[in-house]
Image (cartoon, rainbow, N blue to C red; front, side):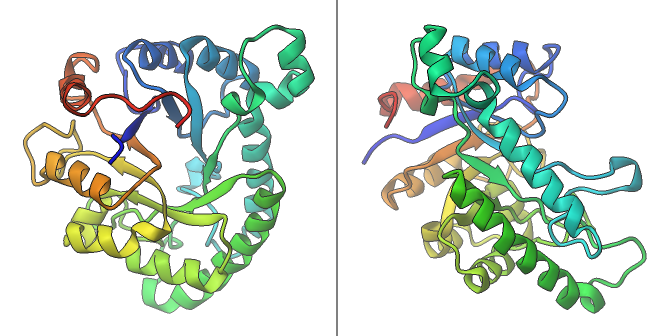
Length: 299
């Protein structure tokens, strides 16, 4: 069984540092081989990609744009009347996802500038297709059917766009008990049913164990049942959303072993709020590496 591979979500980790480039450099120096950026749209793509390259990081995951945050939007995939805005956001995510490879002219530019790595090393792998929230004042049960129909329409469109770019789209259930009471997609069962209806191999499930524990528990059973659909895993302790070894409900040594035993090959994203200094709080990860070793680069 191969050891798990970990990615740093630099939108969450290293909050003591100013800006995404500084956080990417810190992730690389802390031993991560990959990074996630929730919303990279405020930074020039080439600057982020160059920083990631210099830090020795793969860039594996971003989110589609949230929409109009001032109006309370948090994704647009299932929001009625916002189909055009979702598609525009998807195109923006794909464009940003190409980062240095596209923004500097592709593989020829990589070779010309002597960057010392392949274009694929810098290329984004996955985009989280955010479902969005139930409209304010609407009854969830009353609008569920309409929102699912919109989501299915948008996901079929997204699957075609992403397939042309060899990208994977992810669906992430977000808990509605603590984090976001209005979010449309909130359980693995709901997400799996939608994926089955869409039926596209480049759309997969994003398993955030923090959200899954809060909504449904039964993590052993749910991991075993849904792992064949999972393209990415994220971790944080429950309920405080801190480091995996912080006090809480989840036994992460057991869960990491379960993921290994079940043959999970993707990245495990560290999406938690550090309880203190981020680097000092990575003792749990250094202990895992000491015990299991680190995956070889590129595996």
